[in-house]
Image (cartoon, rainbow, N blue to C red; front, side):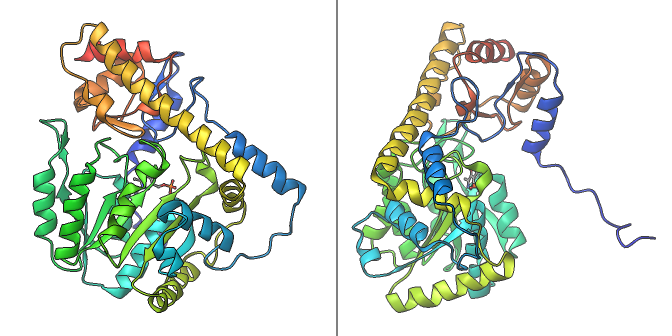
Length: 399
Ligand code: PMP
């Protein structure tokens, strides 16, 4: 008997498993719409010009790599705050936001989850039904019981908003509610600003803890547009809420693990106390964050020319995704598909819940080499002018 004799094989990550299957597929015209990664029209992962320029600048002035402070690069944390809350935000002027550099958006969620578990061990967590799969796993691993609030409306292609609101209003005080700030993953359906007002009213009335996950700022309708929900929370006077930020997609810096967690507090003093606890969560998980990615992002955000270039490049990615949505919907009609796919254009962000069933997704994969998730989720950001006709023909064939 070895110590590990009783260790069971963990289930494979469904999306990574799909990638392995895709890699092993020998068909030359295979298409991977499974992963949540933005590819350009040539099907390549972009290296943004603003990132390259910032890296050149950093290399020329290369510095030794000491440990960073536990909460990361101060200039980076400040730049994140200005991006997320607005440069002239009153909460920033009042020092009411604790921001820490995190290992991607996932790291921000995890640090927040550990902090919350210590603060209120009995709280439950609610995630949307469905949600990014890691939300459930991450909060469960942090020790929480995780439930769901209604979200996807398969019948009407949208959000079951009344049911969502009813679920939030039925939650116990202190329940942690994970909300997608924009570009809902996996469905692609966001709620409207008027609906957000009602969610915020429920958060206030029921004393819920809102944890906004903002992994796609700039991928929906624009940086400010996608961040507008934060302004709504501030304007409504919600004193405490969480925002996890990811730059994986918006800077195409997936492998650098650049993200942040911001916690809005009621006073400067409260912010200092919260920050001290966030630092304990970091210190006991990974001690302190890495330098490179955050330096790149801070340089881009704080250098006006690079910032303008980033905004252009981000707009380019956003517009290309929208073009692919329009094209996909149009080409399905042109291919004689009777079913209405107009919803694809209304969805936001990288993903589309296509409404295709598991057997249809299997046929797409097996017969046509078009890989999407069994839930019917496809990554619109992996479509391009070269592969779209093939994808349309395959979808038309399996319907
Ligand atoms: N939240 C959501 C909703 C996501 O889709 C993702 C990335 N797929 C993340 C968080 C995590 O982002 P990161 O890779 O920066 O950890």
